[in-house]
Image (cartoon, rainbow, N blue to C red; front, side):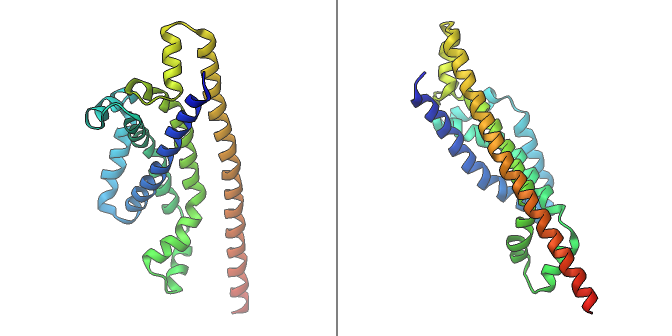
Length: 214
């Protein structure tokens, strides 16, 4: 197994993660801000998650052809659910008092969203991003079926020629990738939640001090 295949796999995951984060955040914000779109967006990402990966890649291949682009599009569509849903849940779970305080300071709806709400909801959003990226590491394996390369091609070839040593090696590399990303992003997630708790405690203490002065 060559390092090139590992780098190809990381490239697929990295490109898909970038698009998933951008599209997932946009859809999550739209779900939060525009009630008429909410059922349609949530229903769509739910349905995409239920489609078998191979079937989804096959449909995309009819349009985009057999290439790494097909794999990236497939991973993005398959990974949107946790990012969209966590963005929506994170934004809706913010204390209404904090939103009212931001509005009282003269912020518009968009300013409040960018300066206050997304920052407070980011730990929850990051959890969705973490789930999406870790899941995409395994999903990218199916890309070998449509010419996407990566470790999936190594695993497929090893199965065909019954090369158990290469199969185990590729599987262990995939597991190592998933563990490293999961633990690394888990640590960042923990730090973000601690920071959010400290921020909320500070805001609460500040609010209580203001009331005492009044």
